[in-house]
Amino acid sequence: MKAVVRVWDAPTRLFHWALALCVIGLVATAQIGGTAMQWHFRFGYTVLSLLLFRAVWGFVGGRWSRFGAFLYRPTQVLRYLRGQGEPEDSVGHNPLGAFSVFALLGFLGLQVASGMFSDDEIAAAGPLVRFASSTWVGNATFYHKEIGKLILLALVALHLAAISFYFFKKGENLVRPMVTGDKTLDFPATSSSDQSADRTRAAVIILLCAALVSGFIVWLG
Image: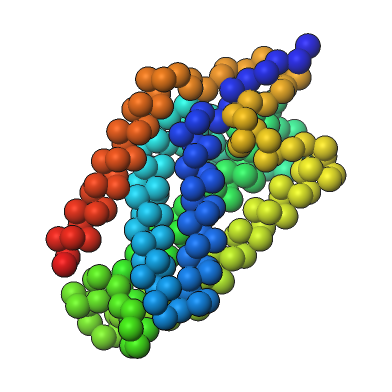
C-alpha cells in the first residue's frame, strides 16, 4: 500500500532553493569581478543568514529536516552501502545524502568565513580583514579563491551526479519532493509537521538570523 508522506517542510524547501540560487550568484559574481563583487558580498551575507537559519532549523524543524533524522552511525552507513539499510533510510536523507548535506553546509560555512578575511588587493576586501594579520589574510584569500571554491564545486557536482544516478538508475526522483514536499513510499512513515505555525516560526527565525548578520556587518562599519 502506497503512502504519501510530507518529508520536506516548506521552510526547508525554500532554504534549499534560496541557497542554490545564492551559490550560483556567488560563482557568477566572482567570475565577473569588478563592481559585481558588491553583489558577491551580498550573496555571501545571505548565505551566512541561511546557514544560521539551517543550524537552528536542524533542531526545531520538521521531522526529516532535523539533524537527528540523518545522523547515522558508521555501522548504519556500512549496512546501507551493502544494500542492507533500513526502510526509513530512504525517507529523508539517506546515509550518503546526509554526508553530502553536512559536507556542503560545513564547507559553505568555511567559504563564507574565509571570504570575510579575504582581500583581492584590488577593490574587494572582506569586513574582517582589518582585524587579522597579513599572513592570516593571505592564507584565507588563497583558501577562499583556490581550495574552498574547488571543494564546493566538486561537492555540488557530486550532489547533481547523485541526483542523476537515482533518477536514471533507480527511477527515484529526488527533486520532486524538494519542490512539492511529499514522497510516495511503499511503507508508512511519520510526516514532517508543516503547518502555518511551523512556517511562522521559520519566518521569525530567518528574520532574526538576517537581522543578526546585518547588524554584525553594520557594526563592523
